[in-house]
Image (cartoon, rainbow, N blue to C red; front, side, top):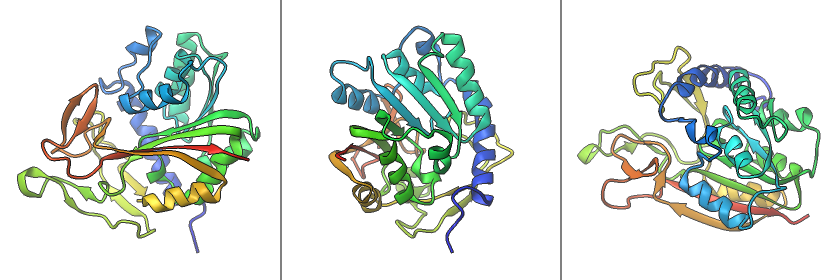
Length: 284
């Protein structure tokens, strides 16, 4: 029997973990909000380039659904670029901070934030076929057990001709962890595509190396590329673009080094891709 997608220990543990992270992240330099206050964007270079390619004439009039938006930094970046955005996150602390920041920026008319588990999104936001873009980036689907249902939800919200922009850590690299290999490189720690959750006890936080979380237990799933692409296809989405990259917007392993603009990559050889992008269209 599979996990309950709307309740259970996995969801409680992950929500408690991300609730606690909000205060750490808001106080960190990693999530510097000053560009937002100046009317700018904090989108990472990969996402910023992807959105610019999708909308070369800008985001004015574009309606965006941002799934797993955390406390809304990227959502508000898209608002500052001209879009109207609805952000969804399962953490009440994150949603409260997103709403507070939207009010501070004076953009509450174009930025709405809803507290919801992704799998409940259709009930919390009953607006099928109402978005031009569904935006999902960085550290999202690894927290979700069922990618087929995720893809169906994405498709349900998209207008005919609407597109999903998705960027995520590459599953081939996510089997690695630690710094026990030659030269401090990470070694294989996790199975690729087992379908089972990795239940991890780790009190650390990527945004603040000094932080120690009380709620450090999380449940994560490694979803192979074939599973993600297959789920999109089965949901009626047509993949327009697929790209792999050798950098990510956080220090994913101790061995990765700064590449500038907040991006991290391998120190010398391009060992494995660290991230990937998918753009897909609802052709319904």
